[in-house]
Length: 355
Image 1: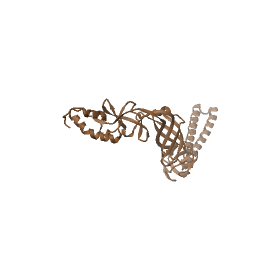
Image 2 (image 1 turned 120 degrees about the vertical axis):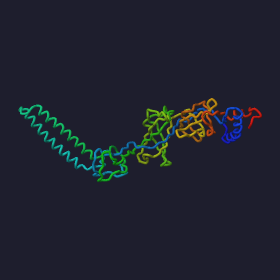
Image 3 (image 1 turned 30 degrees about the horizontal axis):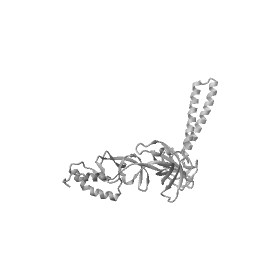
Image 4 (image 1 turned 180 degrees about the vertical axis):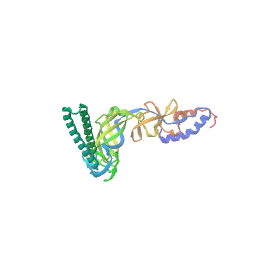
């Protein structure tokens, strides 16, 4: 039987002294608590989750070679097109190396052509011709390397995006791998949220979601699930789900905190318990159960919340007996009884025992 909280407190106060007396009289110490039998009930198949928005594509541009910044060809906070030149490093040294490699290759080609003529006239050996050809191949590869190095002095946008704040200034010398600027594609954003494994069979690619963001009160946005992690987290029992949200006006920004809701369709059965049964701890949420007359502390995974109630995704099953209040007085293994049982035990105490 479930007692209102006010009645529960009064009964506990009345029973506290007799309980001590009962223990002193030789009976086992017990704690009277308000309990309820756990049952599941039909609920709408909706799931709520929270997470931070992330850009569809995001990258920090970094040079692949050392060099001095010659030009910065973008404006902070402004859109850039895919392939647009954003940063140019000083290329004088690379151009000189490329010119030298080109000259060396031209000379090697002339020597190889001359060697072919000499071999035909039997003035040099076939081995000498092979060595000349090998040198020619080396110089061709060198020319290609110098061309690649020159190309790396020009840094382009890998995709259309919005440029962030620049981390360098023209004239600065930067090393390979130094941060230059961050690019974020904002045409659509992604939201990654944890979903309890109990809903996994109902979540599907293309599932519509609705979301709100704290920074834009009163506005609602739409998206669709586009990826589901194939692995369930063994600790939280959640699976990561990603949704894509169209953002043509650029209203949403990466990092915004979002609240998402998805209608999974139809009804499902779930365990909903009063919020006061939850015992929060640093490593998660717990509830006290009455198992074989003793208090048992069990870890649970919480799901969605309703006014005054919270869903228990795992850790408690229908048919379990949960302690509703008085948890602060409980320890695992302590005998517990219902209020009715405690009252009956007090009534049956032998007369004349100390109180």
